[in-house]
Amino acid sequence: MNFLPSGICFYLSVATCWLTSRVDSSWWYMGTLGSQVMCDNIPGLVNKQRQLCRQHPKAMQAIGAGIKDWISECQHQFRSHRWNCNTMARDHNVFGKLLLRSSREAAFVYAISSAGMVHTLTQACSQGELDTCSCDPGKKGFSHDSKGPFDWGGCSDHVDHAIKFTQSFLDAKERKERDVRALVNLHNNRAGRKAVKRFMNLECKCHGVSGSCSVRTCWLAMGDFRQTGDYLRRKYNAATQVVMNRYGTGFTSVYRKFKKPSKNDLVYFEDSPDYCIWDHESGSVGTGGRACNRTSRGADSCEVMCCGRGYDTSRVSRATKCECKFHWCCAVHCRDCQEEVDVHTCKTQS
Image 1 (tube, rainbow, N blue to C red):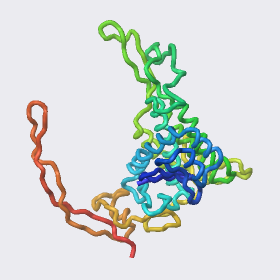
Image 2 (cartoon, rainbow, N blue to C red; image 1 turned 90 degrees about the vertical axis):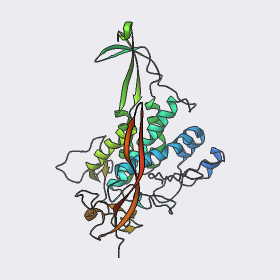
Image 3 (tube, rainbow, N blue to C red; image 1 turned 90 degrees about the horizontal axis):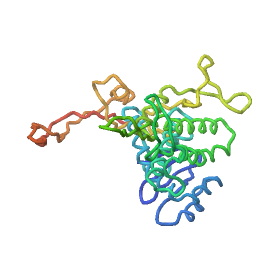
Image 4 (cartoon, rainbow, N blue to C red; image 1 turned 60 degrees about the vertical axis):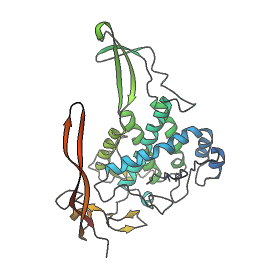
């Protein structure tokens, strides 16, 4: 399953495809053909994107390989909701028309995509997979933190290089436009990039007599991408609805009593559909056939998930591990057991 915004939509099959137009133009296929041939023949790229695509084939390969992780994170964050970061498998734009609507969900997709690109490229730099970067060259010499002085060493993740490339590539399309949609997309792209940098951690190794920390060697390392996903999900929950200001240079909150969104916040300007039924125009695939929890009172409950249409219950057999015993040393042996469970799935629209 695949995705991304305004730009960004990937197919992870024989080739990798990324949509970068507001409607339905695809951007990027990475197969057996050379990157220059592919980049020159993909519709929908602005000149700067095409140039970056040709000049940095290894970066594009790294991005293509990392897309599944961003999709997986998006689907994890919304696994129990009507919109579950789902895709339209038979549509060349796997998010259908979702990204034509500047909704709260589209804001999250732009942000998680931008964050995912930064995270993937930063890893590729540190692992020596790219010719244009490696470890952060600025982390040299001495520094200090709350625990005292330390020497920079090891390989600090070069997140600033990844941020710069991601900004150049993703923002190029939006900077060709002057409408509120472009401004909103640029804002959410930036929020995604900044989210990754928020979770950079200082990691250290101690040196000294008897393992003392009289001398420390430290480096900066990215946090797990789940931290970024959790953070952006919280920003999605608190996203601000905006309108273009009267000068056409920015946007303001729809509700004046709310403070102006910061650079870290997500913004949107169109209401979301309810995602209850299949609607190609809004990008909704509906909730028919989705599993629901009959006893829950949350978003995953059958009442909420099924939008009042009701649900079907079926009895299924499920394999589980049972009668597990610990054996010295150091293994746990279990039997394979079958249990009968009820599975509840939403009815389709009538």
